Amino acid sequence: MTTTTEQAREPDILCHGLVRIFSTEGVEVQALQGLDLRVERGDVVAIVGASGSGKSTLLSILSGLDRPTGGSAVVAGTDIGAMSRADRVRYQRHTVGFVWQQTSRNLLPYLTAAENIAVPLVLSGAKARTERVEELLGLLGIEHCRDRRPEQMSGGEQQRTAIAVALANSPRVLLADEPTGELDDATSAEVLEALRGASERLGVTVLIVTHDPTVSEHVRRTVQIRDGRTSTEVLRRTERDDSGAEVHVAEEFAVLDRTGRLQLPEDFVSALDLRERVRLALETDHVGVWPDGAGRTASDPAGATGAGGSSGAGGDAEQARTGRAAGDAERAGTVGATGDPDALRSAGATSAAGGSTAASAARPRRRDLRGEGNDD
Ligand SMILES: Nc1ncnc2c1ncn2[C@@H]1O[C@H](COP(=O)(O)OP(=O)(O)OP(=O)(O)O)[C@@H](O)[C@H]1O
Ligand SMILES: [Mg+2]
Image (cartoon, rainbow, N blue to C red):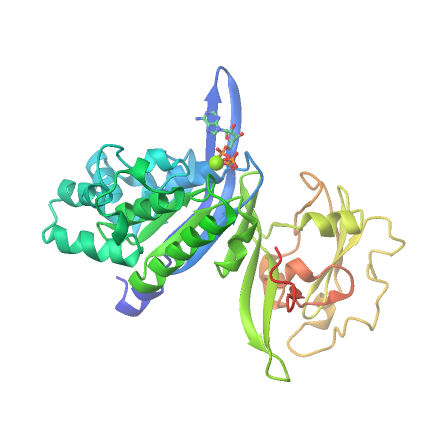
């Protein structure tokens, strides 16, 4: 039995090894290939990735519209794969809210904003509907649209109304697939701020799929999907430097799956011309990755005897100098960490793996964004 403290710590979205294979006319497409994702309660997270990388497939599964072929997804305590038909209706009505890219798909064209927001309340038999509608119109800053039909609203107003509709029954999780895809930059910013504001005020967890490069200004965490898996993520925070000035810091992390696999960022792979096989070395506080054939021996792949500080605190010096060649990478950019993942983790490499190539030691790749606006 879980205690209240454990429940409070449970994430709102937890995917393990999520797989979705589409078969059409004998051709199989693996849209999701073992995707792992964890989103804490109340967080606002953006999912980015190339067209066809599996973003919409992920959201369809999380919204209960589609079922995974394998793996597991738990949203707000509900196991998506094990839902009955009745569970699914309840889940879609009360647990998750959804906002689509097409403004026209989110709202009924012949109803006003207030009437559109009332629809899910009527369907769920909610009481005090008028009060709830007014509350949401105010929260989204669209009181002036109360009696307007969608065609009488701007694209941004329509999407903010759509967010109000999605929030009507107080879901724990709000899913939005390209909610700003049809909007200009200024209007996109308004809609992204509306999503963030809703999360702040209502505590709702928000997952936004987007191509919008400005999304990083509005969310603290951006997760990248590549080929149906989460590959890297960027966390942002604000710090004060020595002079007291505000500095925006972005740190990029590689995602390590349960079997120890991680995907190096594309620019790391191309910068060192990494292909097929790379050499690995376990140091006390980081893992080194070198191109195969870089003129180093397996016993000293870093050419760095003494440079890694392998006698430092907490590490087994013998183990810490272990160098390995990671072979048969599935494709360029994917490194199979052939070592014992626990040993790697105990060396402090879990979150630092994205930044451990070359000389950047164990620190995650970190960018000082002062004066640059933002970066992704
Ligand atoms: N119903 C389906 N039947 C067959 N293949 C599908 C289906 N839905 C998606 N796919 C395929 O799965 C892969 C992932 O598609 P998905 O729509 O999740 O990508 P996406 O990341 O949302 O792309 P975009 O940014 O273009 O919206 C693609 O190769 C797509 O062609
Ligand atoms: Mg899509």
